[in-house]
Each structure stands twice: as structure tokens, then as C-alpha cells.
Image 1 (tube, rainbow, N blue to C red):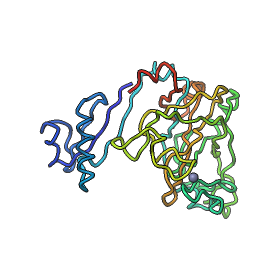
Image 2 (cartoon, rainbow, N blue to C red):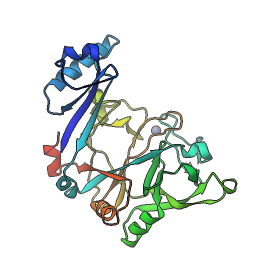
Image 3 (tube, protein in one colour):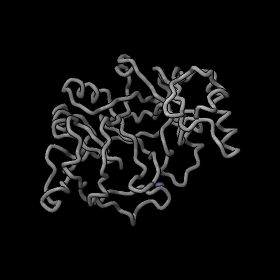
Image 4 (cartoon, rainbow, N blue to C red):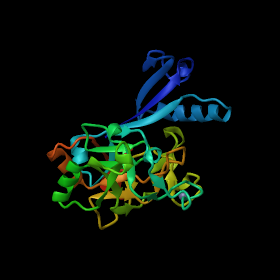
Length: 288
Ligand SMILES: [Zn+2]
């Protein structure tokens, strides 16, 4: 696994740590990609923290990027699933109801009441998996059939109503809502969370307002406790994110290796798999 931290620094501050010809200049900001083992990252973090306390900053963003070899993904016992297609609108903008009365007052986690409603005209094409900006997951009928034929476990789906047509009463063709119905994975205490790479801490140290939340964003690779009995679709027991407009904290989706294999074999589109780790597995000792 190659892990790089992409940091964006205003041009007039680059010289405080980096040489003048490093990185790429984009509209007055220097974009630098540093291997996570680069010793200067310690200085970057310290300088940013010092400036932050004084009301300023060194970098405007710092985001980790990871690249895996096929062999690393092939040998992963658990994978994190991300969508290639993230789209608007959110279900709530199209009449999907959430239980605001029963929602957690602290973090906003709430149950969806009734069917997901979305307009067919806005659903991405050419993919079999897509997610709204609010985290509602869509699986194509074709992908569901492939998973169902292979008897994969943990993939529950519900019909979606097309908010575009028939007064919102018609069923959306080709798509179903994917519900995180599999085994819940407890997040390992070593998983780093935060708003950005620079302030990331192991999640139990992140200030939380309630028991649902793990943290605002996953910063490190996801580490989970092996549940023993695994399903092919799994989800973290804790939630990531914050209530902000249409957004609510959501669990992170994980899968077994079988899902990745089937996606490749059936040429299903729109699935991005990253490595996740079981705590105590051989991989966790060597990862950075
Ligand atoms: Zn909560």
C-alpha cells in the first residue's frame, strides 16, 4: 500500500517547510503529495497546530490517498466499499421521510420511514452502485440478481419510488435501495478519525456527543474487530459524519472478498473497493 498525504499550502507559506520548486502550483495554492513516511509531515502538523492556536493555518487541506496492489486487495479479508458515483438530490429533498421525532438529538442519526424516493432522471447511468450525497445507497437490479444468484448474505433491498412520475407513486425501474443489513462490525480503537489528517486521533479520543458516533471522517484505513460470523455485506456498528443540512451520520459499508470477485466477474460498474483490516491481523502491524 502506498499512502500519500496531499496537502494544499498557500504559496506565501510554502517556503516555511518546502523548497520553492516542490509540488504543483494551482491558482495561488501549492499542492504537494508526500509519502506518509516523509519525516517533514511531523513538521507540517506541528507548524499547522501552532498557527491554528494563533488563529491561522499552514495548510488549507490535508487528505490521505491510498493505492493498493491487486495482491493486497486479493488478500484482504474485509473490504471497504465506496461508490464511484455520488449524486444529488438527497432522498429527503424528494419526499423521503426520516424519523425526525425519534432522531438522536445529539448526532441526528434517524431511521428512514417508508420508501426511498428519488427522480429517475437524476440517477447516474452506466453504474450498478450509486450513493446520494446523503448516503442513501442504490444497487442496480442486475447487481442484485448477480449477488442473489451467488447467495451472498447481508444484501437486503427495497423498491425505490420514482418522484418524477405518476405523482411519485411509480416504482423506479432498474434500481433498488440497498440497506445495510449484514453483520455489524465494531470499529477498532486504533482507527483514526477527525475532520482532517492533521488533527486525526484514535476514535475513542475524539470528543463525541453520543454513543452512535465514531467521528466526523475516517482518516486512517478502517480497522474493525472480526465478528467471527461474517456476512458478505457488512457495516460498521458506529456512524461517521455529522448532521448538516441533508446529511446525517452513516455507517461505513464493508464487504467480503466474494463481492469484489463477483463484481469483477460480472463486470459490474461503480464499485470502489479499499482494504479494511481486522484488528490483530498480520496486515495491521505493517500498515502505516
Ligand atoms: Zn447519536
